[in-house]
Image (tube, rainbow, N blue to C red; front, side, top):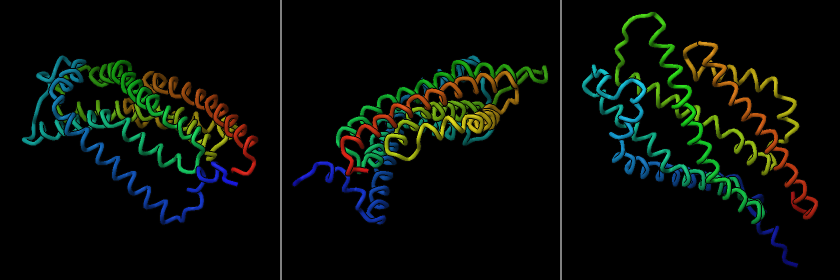
Length: 253
C-alpha cells in the first residue's frame, strides 16, 4: 500500500553525491539572490549612509583619506542592504534543503519560520544600532579624552560588522528550533550545556564588542543569554512535536 511518508522521506535514501549536488544548487541560488539584492540595494546606499552616520552627526563629519575609500564603503553598505533584501529568499533556499526528507506538515512549519528568521535578523540589527552602537562610540571617543576624527572606512566597517554579527546572533532560537525539529539536537543537550554556553557568549561578546568595556559586554551578553533560554524552550516544543510525529508514524525516523 502507498504510504505518503515514504515519499516525504525519500531524500534519506539519496546518495551523498546527490545531497552535495542539491546543496550546490541551493548555495548557487542563494548567492544569485544576494547578488540581485545588492543591485537593488545600490539604489538606497546614500540614504542608508546618512542614517547609519546619524550617531556621529552625519557623513560630512567623517574623513576620507584614500582615493578608493568611498567606493569600498559604498560596496560594503550595498552588500548589507542586499543581504537584508535577499534574506527571505536565502532562508527559503536553506530551509528547503534542510526540509528534504520531512513530512509535508513539517515542511510547512519550516516555511512559516522564514518570516520569523527575517524579523529576528532585523531585530538584532536594530538592537545593535540603537543600543550597542551609541554605547560603543561613547566608550571609544572618550577613552583618552582627546578630540577624535573619525575615518569613513573605519566607522562604517565597525558599524556594519556590529550590525551583521549581532543580527546573526539573534537567529539562535530559530536555528535551534529547526535543528531540533530535524533531529540534530535535543533540549537536554542545551540544558546541560548552559554553563558552556554562558562562557561562549562571554567570548563572543568580547570579540563582537571590541571596547573591552564590561558594561558593553553585559549589554550584549544579557539579551544573548535570554535568546539562549528561549532556544531551550523552542527546542523543547520542537522535540515534543517530533516525538508526537514518531508516535503517529513509528516507521518514520
